[in-house]
Length: 62
Ligand code: SF4
Image 1 (tube, rainbow, N blue to C red):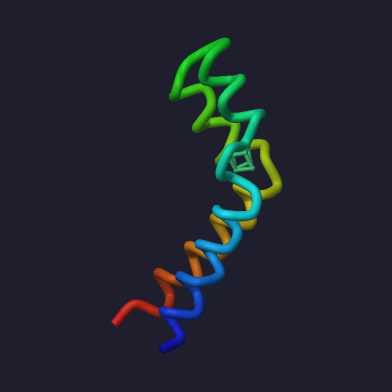
Image 2: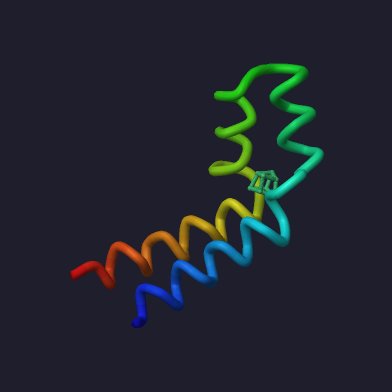
């Protein structure tokens, strides 16, 4: 049950901020997919939040 809540939280973040993200699509176009992904996980505060939620998911695995 807790895992479902965490996954829901993650989906909400992705839907709210990441779907159609102009920053990511611009970085993909101007550089490449890897550069855009690195920006997401290293620089963006939304990516930081996703990492935290992902850690909660790992901590709650059965
Ligand atoms: S993590 Fe940040 S930069 Fe990457 S897609 Fe989501 S909102 Fe956009």
